[in-house]
Amino acid sequence: MRLCDKNIQQLLTFTIRMTFRLSNSKLPDVKTTIFTEMSLLAQQENAVNLSQGFPDYQADENLIKYLGNFAKQGYNQYAPLFGIKELREEISRKFNLQYQVDYHPDSEINITAGATQGIFTIISAFVEKGDEVIIFEPAYDCYEPAIILNGGIVKNVKMFYPDYEINWTEVKNLTSEKTKMIIINNPNNPSGKILKQKDINELISIVKDTNIIILSDEVYESITFDEKPHLTLAQYPQLKERTFIAGSFGKLLHITGWKIGYVCAPSDMMKEFRKVHQFNVFCVNTPAQFAIAKYLQNVDNFKTISSFFQRKRDYLKNALQETSFQLLDCEGTYFLSANFGAISDAKDKDFCYWLTKEHKVATIPFSAFYQDKTDEKVIRFCFAKKQETLDKAIEKLLKIKV
Ligand SMILES: Cc1ncc(COP(=O)(O)O)c(C=O)c1O
Image (cartoon, rainbow, N blue to C red; front, side):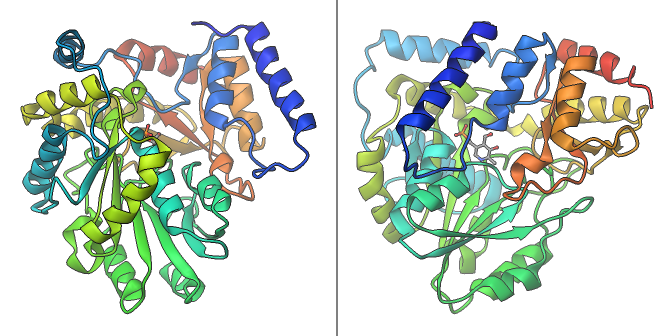
């Protein structure tokens, strides 16, 4: 479906009408996400869309075939609350194979409606009024509203251009008996940075002798580059005992629209998670779970994902080196980010609008990932796109004059 001016107008009218009707919003500062905003603008401007994080190519036809087959065979009713056993077993096997980590399929794994629902449910199950939750900015946008809706208090630790390193001294100083949870996103969207052993050691020493729960958003766990390993927090017993891992098949299998993910945690924590999950969504799309479970039986279907995306990253990176963008070191995820300071003095969001309107390439400004809209003139390009799309974008970006 193409969105036209009329659709955009309707969306805005709806938002305005709702604003008038509700005088007491629970999320007064939340607006339409930047991802929706830039995708709408890209459609309106007929621009190449490198903004929102989703592939524009078809998923593997075997996976699609499995989905159809399971639906035809009658797997169309409610799945169990935990998710189907076959899929939980495949997730358990994957953790074991890739990271030599054990999660019991019955008591320690639950299927979710995308990582987003898993994350929301984890926060709802544990964060109470007045609890503090530490998050790292630039931050993916679903953490903060979930914390606020549950009465929690967000404590931000900012990471800055160009290294986006975590300042662990600041984390330590922010931590107190009020700290209920620390949310990690590794590999990080949007910076593309991954945690190193020294970061893990710092985290271990900070949470030691506390009751802090860790939520580790690892939706890009299978996408790391240049032979750099993904260090899942599940690999560290001192962290695993207090950690929820959130994962997403949308990212792993190029099917963001299926909205199937999972969470893993020790059984006592999972028990609490399930109490909320039961009323939050109860269960998740049945034929899609069966299709994914069958597809994961073949390890080749997911073990080459890093090299698949590394080719795309390298292609875009090599091309953009010819431009005046200063590229960040993308160690994981499917986002390559860049500073545009040599091209323009504009604010990053204005620059993204200009780039979409004048050069017909849509991107995402980093300021959208900071509560206070910190602007270091950095934007994010999504390279989970077919070759033709990347070529079109590159052709346009090479024409930018300084
Ligand atoms: C860091 C991060 N976490 C969570 C999600 C949401 O994953 P899902 O689509 O499985 O809900 C995304 C999606 O872009 C993401 O980038």
